[in-house]
Structure formats: structure tokens, C-alpha cells
Image 1 (tube, rainbow, N blue to C red):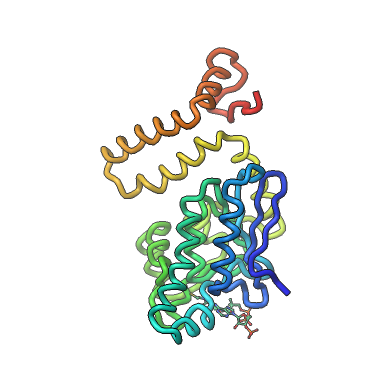
Image 2: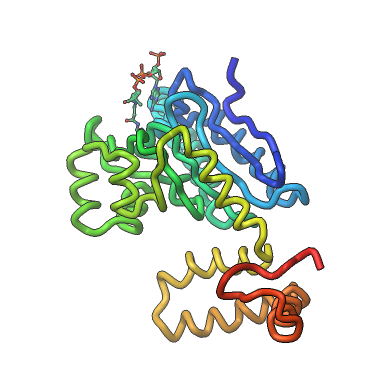
Amino acid sequence: MSDIVKFEVVNKIAWVSFDRPEKRNAMSPALNRKMMSVLDELEFREDVGVLVLTGEGSAWTAGMDLQEYFRDTEAQGLKGIRQSQRESYGWWRRLRWYQKPTIAMVNGWCFGGGYGPLFACDLAFAADEAKFGLSEINWGILPGGGATKVAVELLSFRHAMYHAMTGELVDGKKAADWGLVNESVPLNKLKERVEEVCKVLLAKNPTALKATKDAIRRVGNMDYDEAEDYLVHMQEAANSFDNEGRKEGMKQFLDEKTYKPGLGAYNRNK
Ligand code: COA
């Protein structure tokens, strides 16, 4: 039997998997609840520096579970519908503002509601063989649950419109061309590539990473002056939380001349 969600922590990387391969990792209410509890468990663990979200079997996730998320909760009336929405949107929101950097490792099918966690992850790497689709139009609804917003955030107007109106699939390579993911590589190289990126992130100052990822998400909706103001205060807040890291970074460059910030991170083990 699959676990619905499973995880393991290896070398400071938390590998979290959608684990309902027999249902193509469709997100049921039970999966959504379990995912939230797994995110809770991992967020502040000292042995976790980065979280990777992937899927077991042929899917990353086939989106919302049409039986358990839609039909069964609709049978419970508005109360059931709203509760299941809170549970799914809840863990995606939690992931968007997660304490640790997050990477979507898209190994296969990614549909509809799957765009929520896809966007929630800071970075996304896909297999060339992966297939992405806003399939909602194919079964008679609009891409809800944030999926339309994700398309508009990540894609050009024309690509978003075409993608949502036709329901046509794009593979990993096209998803990378369109900006839906950072990169696409052959499936048998995907984990290796993601591990490489994890190592880069693990070498950085974690306070600076959290401030940076939040800033990237926040400033998109601000005008220039608001963003400038937010970033001044965000930097000062980060300094007061971990000023030693920043000073060490400056010292190793200016005084000790042991590294160049343009070419890599300072040594955090000193
Ligand atoms: N909700 C509920 N069940 C789903 C599901 C979903 N989103 N996606 C797959 N499943 C179930 C199937 O009903 C099937 O269940 P069964 O074995 O009890 O009959 C099982 O998962 C395997 O699916 P199957 O369609 O046989 O797998 P496939 O590999 O041939 O095709 C997909 C994979 C993803 C292309 C296909 O399952 C599909 O189109 N799923 C729906 C995708 C979708 O529109 N999601 C948007 C929701 S917002």
C-alpha cells in the first residue's frame, strides 16, 4: 500500500513525494491533510536545508482528485467544499512561504490543481518526458484553485490563454521554454540535476535565502518605490536576525580575500 505522502531526509535534503501512484498522485482531502502535517514536521528541523517535492510512479500529480476532492465533498454541501478547499489551498500557501527553499521535481504528469504546488515551490525542474496540462477545460470547468493565476504569473498572455483554452499538453522542454519550470532534463538525469541545485542552495546563508525568496514573491505586486521600501526594511530585518553571517561574508572577501561573492558563497563553517 502507498503512504499518500512519504518523505526521507538525506544530507539535509527532504525528499517529499506524492505517494498515490495507483491514482496518479491525485490530491484527495486525505493527501492534502497529510501533506500539511509533513510540511509541519519538516519546516524547522535542523537537519533539513531544502525540500524537494516529487511524485511516485508516472505522475507528479494528476491534480485534484475528481472523486474524493470534488464529487465526495460536493455531496457534503458547501461546508464540505470549503473545508476541502481550505485544506488544499492551505498547504500550497504554507509551501509558498516555507522557511526552507523548495524545489518541484516534476517527474511525470502535472495537471490542473498541480499548478498550485508547482508555483508554491521556489524552483521547478522537470523531466523532458513530463507532461503539463490545464485539463479543466476538457472536463467542463475553468482552471480554478489558483491554476489560472499560476498560468498568468508564469506564462506570457498568449501562452496562458492557449494553454487554458485548448487543454493541450506541453512536455518538460516546452514547459522550460515557456517559463513554467526552470529547466528540463531527461528523466534519468533529473534527480542528479536537482541534487546539484540543492547543494548550491545548501551552501548559502539560510536567513538570506528566506528573505530573498519572500522578496521575489512580494515585490511582483508592488510599484518601484514600494518595493524599494519593502526591501530596505526586509534587509534590516534580516540583518537583525543574522547580522553575523553578513559580516562574515564581508570579512572573508574584504579582509581575508578568501573568496569572491561574484563567484560563489562565503564559507559558513568558519
Ligand atoms: N482524480 C481522480 N482519479 C484519478 C485522477 C484524478 N485527477 N487521475 C487519475 N485518476 C485515477 C483513474 O481514475 C484511475 O483509477 P482506477 O484505476 O481506479 O480506474 C487511476 O487513477 C489511473 O488512471 P489512468 O487514467 O488509468 O492512468 P493513465 O496513466 O492512463 O492516465 C492521466 C493518466 C493523468 C492522463 C489520466 O488519469 C487523467 O487524465 N487524469 C485526470 C487529470 C485531470 O484532469 N486532472 C485535473 C484535475 S483538477
